[in-house]
Image 1: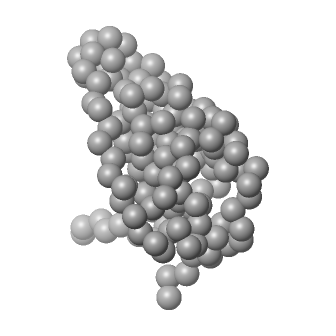
Image 2 (image 1 turned 180 degrees about the vertical axis):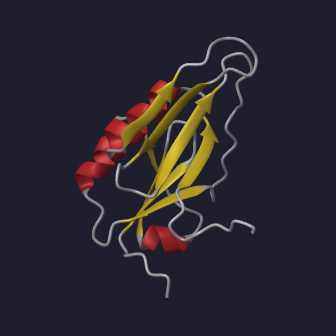
Length: 138
């Protein structure tokens, strides 16, 4: 029998990071994610530092890695988005907190995200969209 992914499967979004401390500032202190797991690798090839962030009740988490011996430079594009559906206005305090913790408010090339939310780049250049709409799969 072949296993197939189920709708309840946990999702991990993995990305390289230049600076895990700066990333933690943005994602934990800025957005409010919790540190789910942390590991320090070392300086040998193949050993990497790891930071996992998420909300404890969520079915996803963000994994950020940095290999000191051979760092991978993040190469995000304007369309590499992590979208959080707020189902309401984007609080000004949240945007200010994200900016105070290393985020940079940007305009999206997609007018949809400008109309329905706010886009903030994290310290590695990946984009977080805070959408005012509710998620609906219909």
